[in-house]
Image (cartoon, rainbow, N blue to C red; front, top):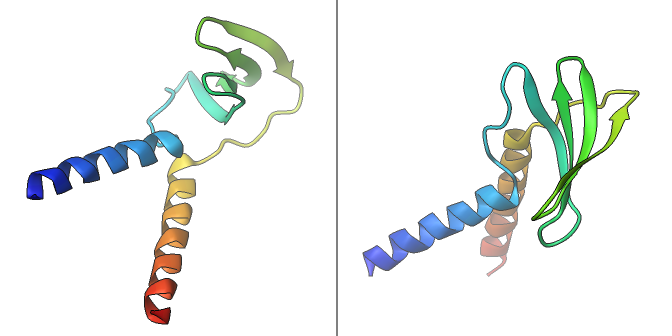
Length: 100
């Protein structure tokens, strides 16, 4: 029973990491600023290379440069997003536990 529980926790953490894009991306020269899923296997990504930001489209078979951004956007912080979403879920769970 405990083995099933451990495997379930590992799978759930893997799903959460993929869902909230909690991965170490980028280096000092190139990093992912923002990304958005547009389909099952498609996404649009803003990458920063040096001082320039580029919008690229990624599919299962292609990576296409869409445009260079004239006005840069501020980088997302995936860890902060995950933390705030996780805290919201914990608060909802605590409130529903008090109501029972």
